[in-house]
Figure 1: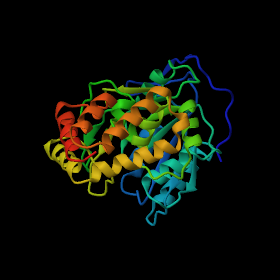
Figure 2: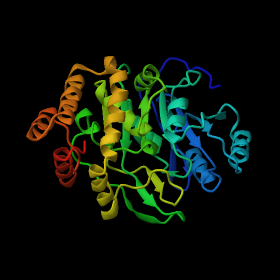
Figure 3: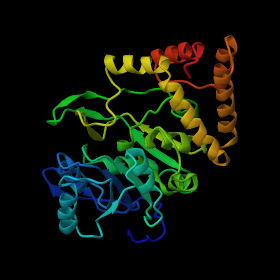
Length: 335
């Protein structure tokens, strides 16, 4: 169990100290961060992720691991780090065993974990040293009562750690109109404040969602919260055969997304998201409820009316090709 915190710190009184190799560490306090790390048979890369967390320039963090039934040496490795860091710095609990999205939702909604901010972490990535610091610098400017979510681009690496590119750069505004048809930030980049965490608690864990990161984008933006998209990558996102969710960059990935618009998969995802949103409709602000209703009308209409209602809903994807695909999918019952 993670001990409760003192009242949330709003002011930034951080300063820095040298830690060698030209690095500086934040010694002030912007609030504590609970890093929610979900694992499943992650022995191959987990140590590199933990080491990158330890090197963070912002050091007021704890790691809470939710393990989904690992049968390799993951738990042994976590015990070693708990002994090295201390139980007050790293704790491990058992996940629900229902997949990665359910695991992240379960640990996020565990009320025994109390913190000022929360960060999701995957077991096979590497965080750049300023990852938490960059996120908190954006989140701290938002009033405490307003749900706030930070996400961003990633630097892609292969299984050996070699750079292989960047995730797509999204330049259009982020918000609920975009979230209804697209997820822009990976969960491995996301950091959110306690007001956003309260939205997760009220929504609960018994939801059939597509992914926890898309749900976070929908939930925070739909409630009128603030979403901050960072164009500067702060994590190294590892691409390998065991990845559950891979990169969305490259021609092959774009063609795959276009196919999903027409094979019914995208339509199915939308329906799952809409069902989840309807279950927490009271948390959405008036504009988001109106936009959701218009989008549903577009989905249930026929012929040209589908395009008209889609346009009225105002939903959009981040790229020109993505929006063209959205219109075509709408014409052929693909939304």
